[in-house]
Length: 385
Length: 95
Image (cartoon, rainbow over all chains, first blue to last red; front, side, top):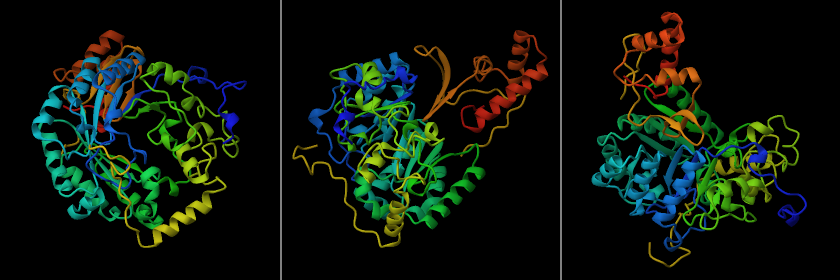
C-alpha cells in the first residue's frame, strides 16, 4: 500500500453513516490475552498484550454502557482466556443490568462449579467451551495443556448442571478431522444446544502452522458430507454451525459480514478493531476507548473507514457482481498472502493468486505435518502471568 | 438430548431460559437473542411472541389475535403454528 492511501487529506474517507452503516450488532471483548492453553491456531495476534496493559473493571463497564447506548445486542466475553480475570463476575453482572446478552467463550480449564454457579446467578446466558479433539491425548497435545480435555468434559457437565446452554467449539484440521463424527456425538452426550465445527482459519499463529493443520481436499469433502448428514438427522436437536477453510471455497467468506459493517472487536488494552486479526495489517492505526468514545470510533476510526464499502476495491473485486456479497473477502488474509490488504482475498477463485496459493496449501496437506509452533504467552515478555 | 417439538393447538410455547425476546431501546426494535443468533422480527411475529409465556396455548394465542385483528381464528392459527414451528426448529421456542 502507498503511503498516500492513508492520508485523510484531499480524499477524505467516508464514515460509517455516510456508508449507510448502522450501529454494530455485537462486541467481541478480548478481556485478556493470558491463557493457560497454547493452541497453535490461536486467533490472538502473535504479539500478545501484557496483563499490566489490560483495561480495568471500570473501563470495561463504561464500554458496556456505551455499547448498549449504541444499540448493540450481544457481548462475547473472550480472550485469551476470559476467566483469568477475577472481575469477570462484575463484568457479567453489569451486562445483565444493562440488558446486553452475554456469551462466555472459554477453554474452561480454570473454571470450578462454584464460579459457574455464581456467573449463572449474575445473568450469564451462554457458554462456549473449546475442544481440541475428542481423543484425550491428542487434545492435550494440540492445546499444550496436560489434563485439559478431561477437565473440559467435567466443565461441560457443570455448565449443564446450572442449566446454562452449552456450545462446543470444535476447531478441526488434518490432525483431528477424522474424529468429526465423535465431535458431534460428544456434543450430544454433553447435552449441548449447539456445536461449532470450525476449520482452522489461517492468520497469525495458524498461518505459522498452516502445514501442520491444512486438510486435503478429500478430507474436507468427507467432513462436509458428515456435517450435512448430521444436520438433517439432528434437526431440532442440535444446531451445527460449520465453517470450511476458505482456501477450498469457491468464493471468499464475507469476513465479519463486511469490514466495519456489523461487528467490532476490542483487544485487552482497549483498542477497537474491525476484526480480531486486524492487528496483522501493519499500517492500520487503531483508536482506543481510553481516548475516544466507542460511538466516535465506530463512526470515524480510520482503521474502519479504510476498507468500508466498495470504493477502496481494485479489480477484480471492483467489477465483480458479488462485491456487496463477499465484500472482497478477508483483508487480513489478503495482507498475509499477497502483502497488500487491498488485494482480492486469494481465497476467491478469481483472485490471480488463488491457484498458486491453493496449490501450495494442497501440497502442504499431502506432506507429513511438521511440529507445532505453540502459542506461548510470555515468550516475548518476561512478566509473570 | 432434546426431542423435536411439534407445534399444535394445545402446545403452550415458551422461550428457553437462554433465549431472550427483548426490546432494544436504542434501535426501537424487538428481537430474539440466542447464542450467536439475532432474529429480527416483523410486526406480526412481535404480536404473537408478546403472548408467549408458557401458560397460554397456541389455540388461546390464536383466539386472542383473531379478536385483535378481526380475522378468522383458523387463518391466524395457521400463521402462528408456522412461525412458532420455525422458531422451535431453530431452538428458540420450547414447551
